[in-house]
Image (cartoon, rainbow, N blue to C red):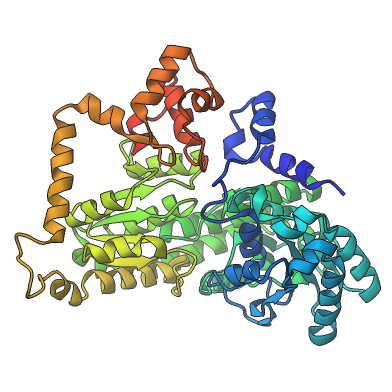
Length: 556
C-alpha cells in the first residue's frame, strides 16, 4: 500500500493530465514535490473534493473521521439524486474532540464503523480522513483493514486530508481509493457486448436519467457510473465494461486511464450537453463498442436514434430562436462546461459574450476556440466589479454561473441562471437542452426585471450608487484607454499578491527568467493560492516568443 505522498506524486504525474502533456519528466517531478502554498485549498480542500466525488454512491455509508464541522461543511453540497437508497444523504462523523486529539481517535473510528454496520448494514463504508487525524497520526488504513476483517464488510479508507491540496486533487485521490480498494473486487453476474462505464458524471438533478433511456433503447447497459447514482457493487464490477466515456477529465482522468491500462477498457472524453455533443457522444460509444465486439448494425441503429432525437429537439427549440436573437450570455463556469455549454447555447442562437476558463484544461480551451473562433473571449479571472460593469453596460443580457456569482447579477438587476452543481434543473441530453432554453427564457423575460431596474422613490435616476460606481469605472477605463500599453501592462496576473503583467514581464527580461519559480522569487507572483501559475506560464511562453495565446487574454 503506497504512502499518501507517493499517491499524490503519482496523481500529479498522471500522463493523461493535460497539464503534464508538454512537461519533461524533470519538470513534472519538480512541480510535484514542492510544498502547497498557503491558500491553495481556497475554494475547496482535498477532503472536500474527495467527498463530493464519492458522495453520490447511494448505498454506501460515508463516514468522516474528524471534527463535526468537516462533515457539516461537506454534507449534501451537490444536488446529485438517487434512484434507490438514500443512505448516502445520512451524515456520519466520528466528531473528534480534544481528548481524541491527545490520545488518538482510532478506537473512536472503530466503534463508529461497528455502530454503522449494526444499525444500517450497508454494502460498504467509505472512511474519509481529514486534517486532524492525519496530523496526529491515526492509522486509518489499519483501522479499516481490521474492521473489514472483523465485520466482513468492505471498509474503504479515502486518504485525502484537506491540507494536501485543492479540491481537484481530492477528486483524483478519491479515484485512487476506488482503483485500489473497489474496482475489480467483484465479478458481475453476466456481461454483454454493450456494457459501458460513465466516469466523472454525478447525476446532478437526475441528468443521467435524461440520457439513459436513449442508451437503453440502443441496448447499451451502463455497467457503472462513477459516481452518479452509483451502487457499490456496480463500481466493484466495472472492470468488465467494454468501453468508457469520460465526462469530466479534470476530476477523474486517472481512473479512466488506469482502467484502460489495467483492464483494456478504451475511453473517450465527451459531453451530453447540447444537441451536437450528445449525438457525437452516442456515436463514439457505439463505435467503441463495435470495435470491442458488438454487432456492426449497432452503428446504423444509433444513427437512426440520433436522427429522430435531433429532429425532435430542433423542432422544440425553434420557437426560442426569435426570442433569443441578439441576446448575449456571460458564462462564468469552468472545466468541461466552459465549452460544452457554449455549444448548447450557440445551437439556440444565443451569442457568447465571454466564457470563464479558470478550471479548464488546454484541451478545453482548444475546444472553445473551435466553437467561438480564435478571438474567443476566454476569461481566466473576472473580478465582481468587471462582471457588474459588463452586465450594466448590456454587453451581456444574462449571466450563467454558480451561486457564488449570482449576487453580482442581482445587484446589476440582470437575469441570472444557476448552472453549477447546486442547481435543481437537469440540462443533459436532447430533452435537457430544451429544458435549459426554457429556463433561460424564463429568466430573460421575467417581467420583474423592468420593475427592479426602476429607481427607488427616494433616489435620483442621475445620482445614485449605481451611476456613481459606473462613472468611477468609466473614468478608470478612459484613463487606461488613453495609454493602451499601460492598460495591457496593468492587467493583474496574480490577484493574491497584486502583481501585474508589466512587473512580471520586466522581471523576466531583467533576470532571464524561464520558470514559474523564478518569477515567484523575483515578484512574489504565485505566492498565494497558486491559481495564477498557468497565467504566468502563458506570459513566459509569450515572452520567449513561443506561439501561444495572447498574453492579454491570459490576464483578463
